[in-house]
Length: 477
Image 1 (cartoon, rainbow, N blue to C red):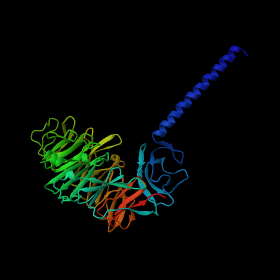
Image 2 (image 1 turned 180 degrees about the vertical axis):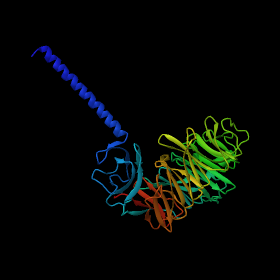
Image 3 (image 1 turned 90 degrees about the horizontal axis):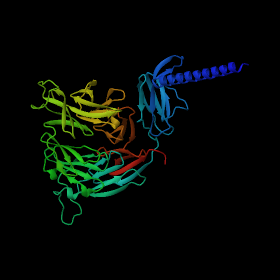
Image 4 (image 1 turned 60 degrees about the vertical axis):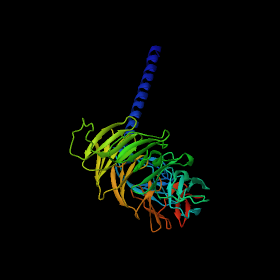
């Protein structure tokens, strides 16, 4: 064969092969892009846009049953492509109870179920500590420490996250100079009772409130070194009516006195000038504070028309002191600021109306009407949900699904079992629920209702029973 023809033929083969490889890459990339965007072949080999479910559980390795069907491949933790619309999801594991929920998959979007918890059916119970005489207890945010209080100046810190829990005594007598200490006594009696305890996010500090509605005393307790604790009321000689830890390590505190908002610098022992006048409610995310205050006569309202409304919702940047007026309202309201995924939201609860605004432009995102008027509002773990309550009545705003579900706990009050579950106690019966009220389960029948319940290290369920701190093992020993 002519060498030139052979060379041209080989060149043609190379070019053809490269074109085929290029087209294959283009097709593969296009197919992958479509899959990532949610397009998939259904059972009829028709292309439709689907969504994805990402599901995990405690413990891991539970069977995942979707719409009544399961396979040996479907275990938590996993992801699965699903058609848009409603689907029933059930988790099951031998030796444990089951968990289920109906979800709504949106086209091209990811739906996360990261909080399901299954409880061991046969749990081993053991007594941890005699707590006779204790009047109050509080759990740290990481659920690993328990602060146990009584009416004296000797409190107890219990570390929960080990097979052999340890305890140590905290002497707080220096923080309460009015404590009644008899001659020769090892401890003093507190002049007033403790009314609230709020921890810092680093789990090393707690803001302790004592006193009455008219006269409050505030203590910033250093958990690791009580000698570094500060009696804030005496240090600054103010009758603060409300306080909130501002940052992770409790070096900054927000305080309200005579309706005015201040910031306290703990290391420098300095209090700021007034940040906001006539404040009625506030919440913060980092150094940004959303608040409700009486409508000021001299505010800068160049970007918003003055109205006859009596209050306004504002945003304060603590470091710069800049205040932005967001909206005028006729009466006071409750507010919360949160972050879900990469977006921030401001939730406003006014009477029985919930309105969610986008943080960056304060445009309305969603609106809901409740059958009751909440008196408390809590932002849940990772901003995924906002819980509003009044006694046993609860409304959960699920940011993942952008919907509100109303429900009620058993008993008169509720608390947080972990970052995603709620507990309540009625007549000794300990009930647990997901944050939206689903998957209600009874775990114990002799729990003390005036003490908290928690799960530590995903291994132990702690609660109080008959003057004892007890725990149940959540996994086989």
